[in-house]
Length: 507
Image (tube, rainbow, N blue to C red; front, top):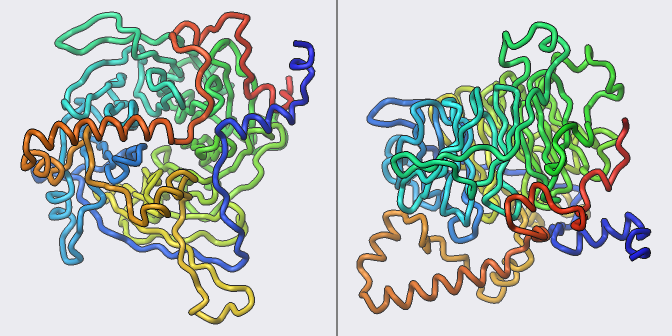
């Protein structure tokens, strides 16, 4: 017991990586450039009326990786099949008619964020009506309403391994923890769920403390993240560029803070630039913060006391609707921009000008990377369209950089080791039409045309493949206990390492 307590922190970090926080690294090429191609664009409209999209999100599992959700200002949520064969001459409206296979009114107010949970069988929607709803995508019905915020819910993030837990941030200046298993009451088959913990005034500016609650924006929580250690939450707000980190077991005060400014006490210097969004890579090592000073800061979670390790410029972050996403492998950063373009940087080349994705006509707000389909990204804009892009890397030989024949094209976003091995063995792409929970029209026709005997055998094989996939997918370490009380408030005998253990916290 004594030996385990005195074990070096570097041993713990090494074990942390061995236990599931690993990401396949690609070899470094000194001479490389990104090549971006627009696949198609879809219009965000309902009954002939266009509306600006506010959030986009790809499904997280390999089986449903071609599906992405779009929420908009009118409260609608739409599901699209990105693998639809788009005609080059088709209009955005025609693409919407062909690729959109589900659409419903989720809220009677704008939906600012969406997030997939429970193997993509459920979708979370955060709205301006101050609630979060849980949707059963297959049954197309609401199964829960999270109530407790007194302002627009701007951001939310599910727990990395327990999809019943999530954190949300709101314009009321609070962030809240939720457990979907704690249902307090029901109304019309919709269960009302209260928060299990809430922190008020998490990012209050000195000015807002003096003048009270006159302006919600002065204390708004703009983005929240559940970190991969499973017990730490990162929050960012509109008042300043400070990041705060909280231990879910003790939410009274943040356990750490980080800021782009070297002098963290100089509140005047950082008060003018709030943070629009946060994102993290699949390993949980890197975190990005897009700031209103038109820069994107990259933090190493293990070295927060040193401030950002890199910063990236070129885009224009003119509103808190502009979002940034780091790629799952941590090698590229994708960001929207108020100038109507999207931008991609290579993390290991911060001094190189970003690659520009041109095509939108107004501010590009929401963006997302496909977690399993290589090189596919999606961007949403105030021009009432959502566009799909294919990203590739042209890698040139250093021996003969002028020889175009030596270039080898590879797309962005790394495959997992297991998936790469499977593709090498089978020498084929995964079956994108197999969608037991989220059925596109093509998959539905295929299902109805099959006989009853083949349907039963197919169902058993699908459930078997689902179990095998759950075993094979790379995950972060599982939580020690599964009950809501023990996850958020474990007994003293259960000691979990937190982000606090990996760096020195300045008082």
